[in-house]
Image (cartoon, rainbow, N blue to C red; front, side, top):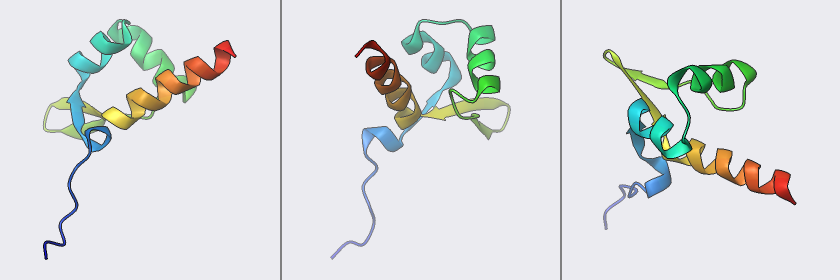
Length: 68
């Protein structure tokens, strides 16, 4: 039996460029949202920033909740 957990799409790291593209915002707005605590800080790997796909989903779910 294999004890390794499979990574779900929500566990994946996505590059900052893709993250802001999916949100439809620019990089400056992203950093404002991070400073406000709306979006968690990125994971640094070398010189690049990555975000968990689950953070993207949490942000979208929060926006949906605000509409209700």
